[in-house]
Image (cartoon, rainbow over all chains, first blue to last red):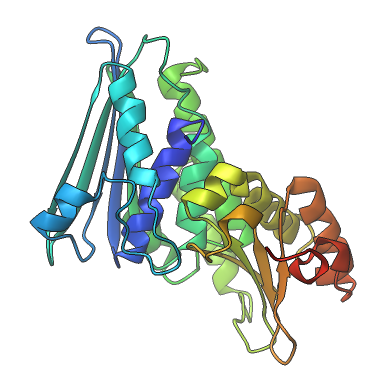
Length: 185
Length: 124
């Protein structure tokens, strides 16, 4: 299994990229009262047929041609369910896919959230022509990063330009600290 | 706190420069495997090492990108260096420290670090 939730998010986001998604929305919502940590990854890529959706959580099913095993999705599902949470995938061909994973926040088997800053930063700066919207919330505090907003302001300056890349990293770190007060989830 | 005005200032500064980042044919591509196997084996710190080095050392002719499953999962993390006119070099079982060496000797120095390449190991 991947050791952090952020790596699972990175993994699923890679799937979205491969599916040709032009806008991928990632949200991590922590609700201390309900004791949940909920991850949603929504893309507008090529989507899957209902048959593929049923089979995608099977480790012996993959659309890759290099190997016969696809472990990312089944492990993510197991990780969520191990904490008393839930996992679901909805998809429509030509529209896109939504992956929802809900974790029991205080469950002893819940893996740490991990380094979301680097995950989002690398997704944004290594895929300059794909738009990402990332929302992180803990109870009532939240922040959103929307690359469409940045893109409009930057007018053609790519995200992997050193100054922009540094800006994005600081933006993510500062806002995260504001939202969770430095608390490690 | 970061403001959008700061981003605007960066844009204004960059627009005044003649060439921002020319993606020309002499670009060296560093391709890091980022499928589940790669991520599980530790590709993220390798990716971080490469992208931080490119930024810190100002390596404008180097582009760091990612790829999916290469099919050699037992050798992950894998990094491929693609330079136009030269043979592709595949580094296997990478970590952040080896990445730093590859940046110094291969990307900057132009010499392949053969002890980390796939050709150096026995393919099973």
